[in-house]
Length: 374
Image 1 (tube, rainbow, N blue to C red):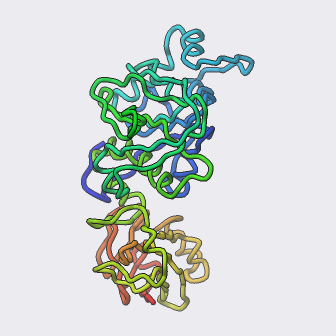
Image 2 (image 1 turned 90 degrees about the vertical axis):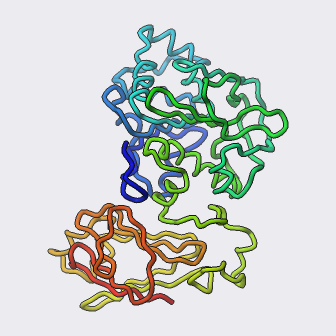
Image 3 (image 1 turned 180 degrees about the vertical axis):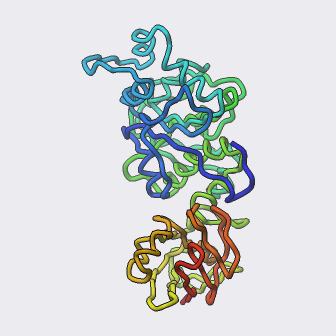
């Protein structure tokens, strides 16, 4: 997919398998990123998009459904690889997934679902593993920059987790065991597409660092398929720009409301109150905490815009984000009829700083508001 610069491309279609021992769909929901079930993906006909396969062997139901195959619920196979090879001698599943990636698609494969990779890549795994906490080196420079850490503790809460034993030629390590040097997550190109594998995934009582890492891992295949870097992908998805020296994790020293803002901050506290003073009467008020992002759409203007005109405001029209450096930003969310800031049209996905007294127009003036910040 061609990338015409930050904020000017659309996030590719994303397809997520049914949740199992982790739930990448839930992470996407928290990021307010749209996705579909994997059963909606017509893999043989697709040449872009991102496939996210959760850690659970039951993903096979979705994969087979994608190709219009029926799965006999009575079949119980301890090895998904054997199940696939024994049941489908024509390798239709393997061929379709292989073709999808080779044609330009991307995928992130989580833990147990790594068995999928053994069917069409040189990947192999050691499953004689136990639950444990691993001191992990972050090998990817972008992850180091965004996490602000070169070494983290991550928990593997499942026995028999899929530790990479052999990785495809040309793979790049993302995470590795600091003690043994064993790779725990990696990415590699496959034809014109890209694949990310991670043995680490979400689990109960995940730390803040682990949660941030998981979000970033999910963004890697999106970044790869759009031809942009991870930092810009993070900004496109969250509306939050990462300044030099900032990370996606709020430092513990920043958690106190008495902490002074960082240099260049436009706010003096860890939250800000934003009022949309609407032309013709009425006010919409939102309080945003540091790092919070709020979306606005048609339903927010029920009491302020006549029904006949309100239809021109998109269901999800724009977002306001209060960044951790104290900057308030506005972003058009690919609205049908556009957003203007001080008379200037915002490009789809474009994020711009917002100051008190700014004028915002939606859908060619269907709704207009002056921004008040306190």
